[in-house]
Amino acid sequence: MDLSAHIRPEALGAPASGIVAVMSHGRGKPGLIPLWAGEGDLPTPGFIVEATEKALRDGETFYTWQRGIPELRAALARYYDRHFGRGFDEDEFLVTGSGMHAIQLAAQLVAGPGDEVAYLTPAWPNLAAAVGVVGATPVAVTLDRGGNGWSCDVEKLEAAISPRTRAIFVNTPSNPTGWTADHETLRAILDLARRKNVWLIADEIYAHFHYEGGRAPSFLDVARPDDRIIYVNSFSKNWAMTGWRVGWMRVHPSLQPVLENLVQYSNSGVAAFMQRGAVAALDHGDAFIREQVDRARQARDILTARFAASGRVRFSVPQGAFYLFFSVDGIDDARAAAFRIIDEANVGLAPGTAFGEGGQGLLRLCFHRRLDQIEEAAERLATWIAR
Image (cartoon, rainbow, N blue to C red; front, side):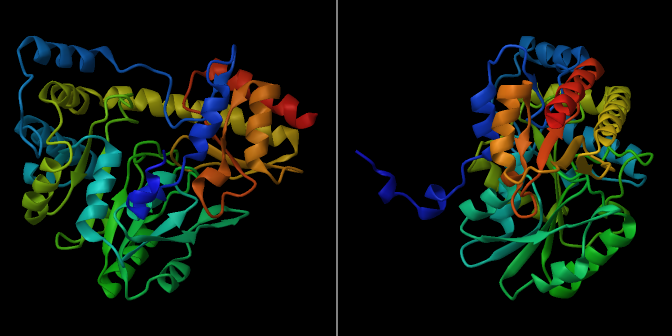
């Protein structure tokens, strides 16, 4: 019996992940180096785990604040004060059950059936899927790929805005391309959103993984307090907490009551003991972030040097995030190549087709891992490419 004909078409039409398909093929293969998922190989640091364990021992296992415990929202304000250079209030922050939850809430807040949300692609596929599930239409605007790397043509983005557009979603630094918007581009996108009277959803999860020095440029650097911007973020990348599923939103305080209701009707709040670990991450994790970014920079340089030496790999050195998005001469079907690379080189990569328009013929490699693994993976891939 198949009951799928009786469910909402938006749920039925949610696309299967092209990354998961590859992972399912290679998972458990002896000796495989898994560079397909967007996470590092380090476990969560002990100081975060210890704060969580203490909260459990102290009995923090009851229902809690749906917008997040005050201590965590205050820690988020302190974190932003340090890294973005101006005062923030805890009422600007709301805790979510992952960055994906934050994206879902943002989509629910601004879009619905008949609406459109423009986004820059190649992109993490979950964004477009989240927009589709709420009944809106995701409208892809392809980043330009040239000799100087990836770039955003704001005029092309403007051409994609219609009377039905409710929001523009921007992820910078970008997964999978590594494209990082400069302040001029951010100002241009923000000016477009103002003129078209649409929301901006800003995903700046990789802000610290910026290889040009310091954190990446942010909409916070160019925005006014009254701009209609929803910032979505996660504890996953900076503090090696991918499995924790804790994130946050930074919004205008006037949106807090509405978002608190949406949290109530989704996950009803993040466990208090997990939030205690998140407080520790924010207050004591800056050194850990710096160590991770330094290691990722070294891994990037090892990988790009080896690929450049092959003469057959085409890529732009990523300015941010921790992915290399590349093509190989002679390979047009990246999805088939990803399966072959698992079987023949014992390295797991994600096919570019999983990231939408502009990803055809490309492969994504996550280089946020031990340097010896990156060196070995680079050698295996170079050998496979040479064959």
